Structures are given as C-alpha cells and as structure tokens.
Length: 249
Image (cartoon, rainbow, N blue to C red; front, side, top):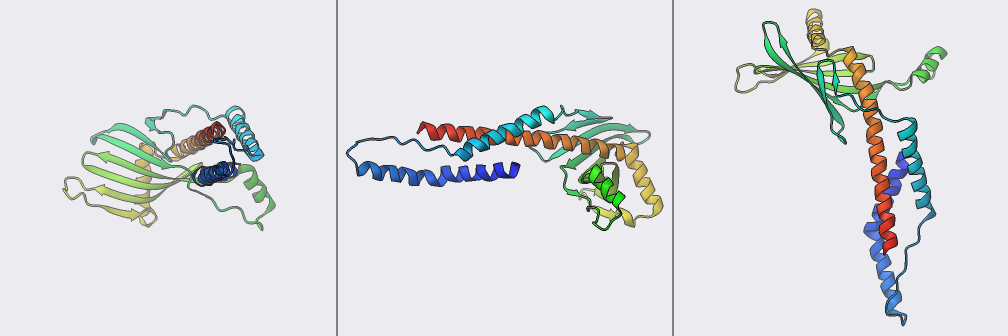
C-alpha cells in the first residue's frame, strides 16, 4: 500500500513538473486556431486519483483507530529520552555519580530497525518453523553508548535484539589529559573472559542491558507507526493540494 502511494505521488509530482507545460502549449495552439479570444479547459480528474485517495484515507483511519501509536515515553529508568519527529534515531541521556569516581554522563544513541535475523530455513523442524511464524521477524537495531567522565570518554558499539544486548566493540574516544584526544578500539570477542565480564558489568551498572534493549525495540516499533502515519498524512495533503490546484486552473 505504502509503495503504491509513493509511486503515485512521484508520478503526480512529475506531472506537475513536466506535463503542465505541454498541456499549456496545447491550450495555446487550440486557442489560436479558433475565433474565441479566451477559453478555459479544466483538467480531467483520473478515477485512479479518487481510488488512491480513498485507499490512503482508509489506511490512515486503520492505523489511527485500529493500531494507533501510543504517546512515546519521555524516560526509561534513569534515562531521559530525546526524540525528534522525522529523525531515524533516538537518544537517551542519564547523569550519575559513581562512588569515588565523580560525576559521569551516559549517552545512548539508537538507530531505527536496521536488520533482521536470518529466517528459519525450509528444511528446519516443523515446530521451529511454526514458532518462527508465530513470533514474527526478529528485528535488530544498533546502539552507540558513550560514558563520559571528566576528559575521558569510553564508547561501546552494541547490537540489540528484542531480548538481548550484545557488545561488539569497545572504544577509547578521548584519552584523559591528552590534547590530541587519541582513539583506540578493540573487538569485544577478542577480549579475555575477565575483560568481557568487566565490560558487561560496567554497562549493566549504568542500565545498559537486556531491559534497555527490550524498551528500545518497543519504542522504535511505536516510532515507526508514528512516522508512517505522519508520512501518509503528508502524501494525503500533497494529493489534496495537487487536486485543488488542478481544478482551479
């Protein structure tokens, strides 16, 4: 439905940009060959335009009434949520004080869904295929976590699934006290067992864990609904304006 609307919107945009000059030229030629000094020809309204608008309004009504997005939460645990309509990411911030370490800021930036798990193969056992169909696609989003303490910034690149958060890379974004702000990074899987455990514990103490992954997946699913509704209403407004302009000529 959304793809059909987008294709039609693009065709209407092209019509406004390219077809109108040809129509105007045809009108001028017709006027020159007749004795009438002026004439007005109203463009015909395509039945497809009416059907497209009906489908569009039906889709908007369905999303708004049957599957409405809920008002997005402004916080999660100690995090404040920063989100702007139309953007493809969301930011969370938290300030905390560690015993003996002073104040620090935790910033999490999450993308919209950017991938999905491989589907269950056709030759998998029947119960696994049924379970996969009931669960639906297992979506993925990426996180960048920054923990700032004084002049030192530690960064973590993470993969998140609906019930799991996995660290991929550990970065030193700024060395404390160095004017150059040196950078370095290590693959999480190549760390020793004790180092991996220490990183996981460090993030959990800052509420960057599986619960945050679940919250972000729910938040992004709701955000996608909101963005889709906003986009459909924008297309509806464009079609109405185009139709109004066409009939006013």
